Image (cartoon, rainbow over all chains, first blue to last red; front, side, top):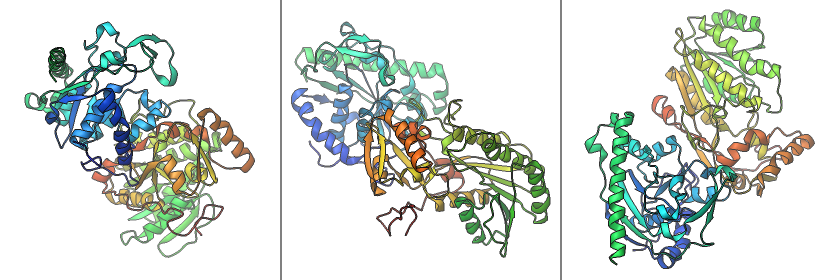
Length: 260
Length: 321
């Protein structure tokens, strides 16, 4: 179902049509329009389980990460915006706000730098955020390691415990074959950890399958104070990793069997 | 309440004195500045005092302030010209703050000390939060301009005395006040018909008005709470939007060219805007989170900026016509 205006949830206007992080509803609508051909025809995104994304209140989406550029994040953002009306707030790595042009474009559609204070504020405001716990290790993984989760950061579990927010795992299938990285050049431009060299000049038109899993309610198992206990946070993060691995296996099997 | 206000001849000090005199709970205001400019009036006394001189500070606090039974102090005297540097400026910004604070700590009658600091004390760099709460890291880079280093040192001087003796110390880290005579870098920046900004970056900027800054100080005096509070203004918008709303031409320029171009502007026109002071903010933003002030001081920004084309116009000096 296509929507005419975004977002449909309350927008925290800081006074001039932008929120505190620079999100602009008009830019969201433009990005949806611009991304539609890629979403619909190039990557032919098929998604299941969108009903697991809460229609209101704070939530944390976690997903596997890959590719030369974060096209997986873009398609996930696009899917959530179009199908729920909520503007997904992807959390970007620390170097992203220092990238010229890209940083501003991303901020206008809801991307936020991954500093703890930023994420805390978003969750306090009831936003739905997306975290790729693999981080740069995910996009840097070689093709042979596709769909194998890399180093797993635990911040999302701590945030979920502290803010009592559900975690929705999302398996993204297709992105890891679409534009894999062939090499990493040790060039640190604009603070990026390396300069990626892709296998192909453009992403291949591999079909994307997004599978949303049932929400993981860490708040049911742990008190809020558990967010300060590194052992419990690591345990909770292992639980989310296992849930995403199962979801990824299911999604890959469904693709092999030709099911959506 | 009987209030001593330093820096009374600055735009902020002047507006604050007027606001305090309009408060029925304020019995007397002792206005202090290094420059002449304030006339004595009912409930208002004015003295010229050089706060960099220890004897003068001692005599002010233990003499006239004691005679007038001053019980609250607002230290708003900070040097406002970002081009000036050196030991004399440090003495005005930091040594004067330390001396006044320590003198006030010795006077039991003075129960409140409000320091209107600046959000310029926060470190803005990749990886730092976009939204700066009171726990955000401060700028401790020794290469930072003296303008910033002095403000950090003065801020920490006041913070270090919190919890000592009887005095309730309030540090207000305000967003930039967009008004003449406040030392506002953006005010000076916006005086050019063409405003250059780094190509590829359009960060969010938060701006405070004099009225909201004064309201925050008056609120802090009334609350009498010890602590650090961010004070944000009612206007948060991208830099390009600010430039256009101010009626200026927004011209993106490659970042490395901006520092030499604005140095040239300073040399040729005497303008106070320093790009090196603003470079990180113009790339990465960094706006203050004022939720603590809202919750504990009851502060609400309620005076948005009066944009040039909303009412009246601006003369070449930038003042309302």
